[in-house]
Length: 230
Image 1 (cartoon, one colour):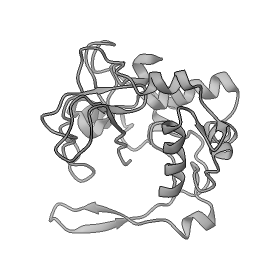
Image 2 (tube, rainbow, N blue to C red; image 1 turned 30 degrees about the horizontal axis):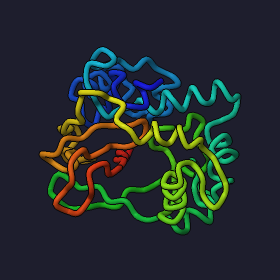
Image 3 (cartoon, helix red, strand yellow; image 1 turned 90 degrees about the vertical axis):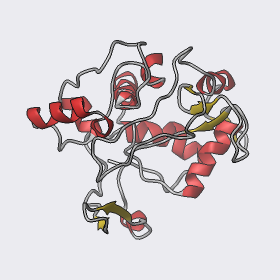
């Protein structure tokens, strides 16, 4: 479990892996969402667990574990244990009509450099929710979540995580390994991904950690999380 959370279990995303991209195209699984992929197919590892760090499909496996252990769908579990207690009323795996009316546009860059608006056909909660990046939310709701993390598991007197759990989530969990740059394999979906180039970065159980102070003013020990768009 800890290797999955720390992104050292060996799994990647085809966005940043030519090998995975080729595998999914050959097997005909390149059109599946992350949640469907984990639930219905076998996803190959790119390296042995603990060998290196790689941002990938790990958290989708964790989401499936939560469903199996709890006996609940991931959306139901999140609503009961996280979203409801924290007052995150605009966060869900599926779009209600009211949420859709407030949906921000997402643009995709075309080969000629122009931008087009991507349509979001999904509305009801998907059958296989993606624990790694399937939620819709708002800035205000996410700030509620971040205040809970800053409060070591509680917000406004409501506790959803043990303080020790948050401490573990926000500490280096990859040892001497380091976060590395991710070279794009699907250029119309993502650029190369390198956050804070030239700075040593580790990973906790939820966040990237910059181990050095940055010229932007971010102190050493700052936390961030990058989420790829499907």
